Image (tube, rainbow, N blue to C red):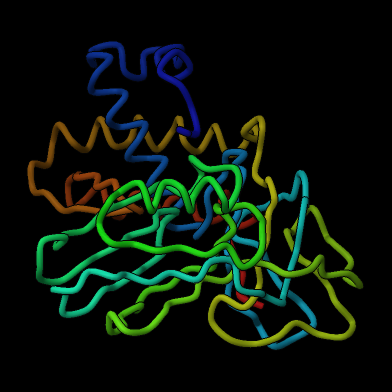
Length: 271
């Protein structure tokens, strides 16, 4: 979500009266991306089910904050699905879980190819099992334990021979004994958090339902700056945030420096 709106930028007296709405919208999105890139966080309220790296210390910070709702934290896992592929002419099969998708690949043979299923589309492991087998690509699935498919732990390298099985895991328990700091998105656990990549599962909602006025003001001003500088400087550079790329002039890239003080309260600080 953008940090300001077209109507609010257009309401600034004399600021962008000569600019088309489409140009202002592009500048708003670019300004939002620059601010979030500088602050190293997303600001709008977002519901997430995600696996995060364990810090190996007593403090654990969520990706977004302030914290609105914390539904579940887990640090232990159990097997959710056992998957095999029985294609006789396949060389090997591969299963990966990333960005909320289950990717099932068969190499060689009549069933060769990749099938992609969106995990959030299924409410139970049993329904996911049915969907996988309905692909008719030689997949055989056993549900080891029920749960929410969207909580399956990411797997980035899941290659195995056709004679073996691959197991997908999901959260096992509800972690307790921690104290949340909603404002900073911190979870303090006297016993400490485990260390390692993707060790902690969190189901939560965090961010701002309403963008703070001072942050919105910075977005408004930066949007106007981008429009002014863009008209005077045609040299281009690019910024990619997630799957979205924004392009603007090289001189515009330095405009964020003017707002460092105002953005200081919102910038993520390493623990």
